[in-house]
Amino acid sequence: MRLVLVGPPGAGKGTQAQYIASNLSIPKISTGDIFRANVSGGTELGKLAKTYMDRGDLVPDQVTIAMVRDRLSEDDAQDGFLLDGFPRNVPQAEILKKMLADWGQGLDLVLELVVDDDEVVRRLAGRRTCSQCGRIWHVEFDDKQDDRCDACDGTLFQRDDDKEETVRHRLEVYQEQTAPLISYYADEGTLVGVDATGPVEEVTQRAMDAIRPFLG
Ligand SMILES: [Zn+2]
Image: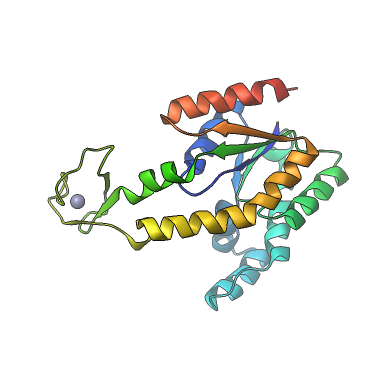
């Protein structure tokens, strides 16, 4: 099973990526992990990427693509993989398609975690971080009414990233960048949406139910 996982910030994509990949016994390949592995392993691509990151610049597409190509060429990815964080846009999707076609492969499925904006805001804007131990509490899900950490009695605060305004902005940016990618995969006939609201295990179950018909 070769699949790509997409979803907005706050959809629980990282967690689902892990569970789904482990259920399918395929490697979870995230661009974050690939970057870290290349940089810490001191590969040529890692060194190149680091020169951009050290300057505070974005790593160019070509470098990211080369890293993805290297990673997908490894033995453990030959019978399938779950990609998380790549492709990010239509040009990258086309390159991925060509890359796989060159190897006689193709994507089986693109799974989109679907959560509405208000739910993402509810999840993220309710988070409070402990200024002392860094633990995260949720005003609603942890029924956190005071501003003290239950673990260490430190003061809780709301990170800028979690402020409603910031969350809504991140969602807008996501929609803008990802909408064309979603419609590209819808046209290709490989897109399946999964309702990502509710408990983590239920979402994984729904995802597995959606994947099952595509298993060879
Ligand atoms: Zn604390």
